[in-house]
Image (cartoon, rainbow, N blue to C red; front, side):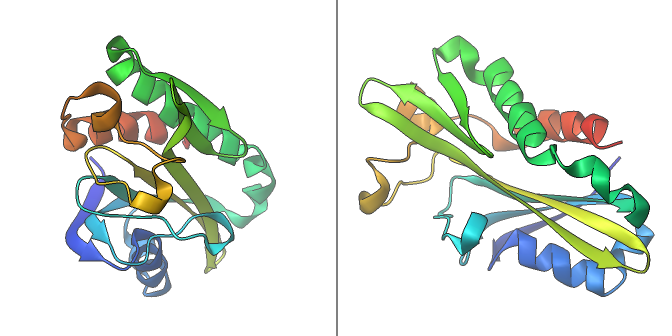
Length: 183
């Protein structure tokens, strides 16, 4: 069983994960997950803003490795993207969604109107007391509204299928895969 923290609204699940690690929370648990219904300051790589309106799945999964093993994570970004893509395909592929990874770690859907981003991933590391904490943050567009300025670039599972899916069920499946991947 993984320890989890759920919030209605956070500035960023990544920021809270870092705060908790700095306060020693990471020493109590080998791994934990933080979810938020809304992020007011969601972000991606190079501090790009990630629209995080209600209806999306926003989470950070945290685990630690010994500092000496940091070299083993060089391909982690693409491996995590592949893990999330496979979980999405296994769960929602029957609805005709065709997904691909845009390196290093964004997940796009092929649509008749062009490719649309449905998932962004941000991986960060934080050192603390001889351990290195890995923070895997992701945002998956489920039923959240896509801002007008992003409609040519992004979509949601709802817009692609016309169906509303249970984010909690998907997250549980995904966390099982992530735990196996990161052991």
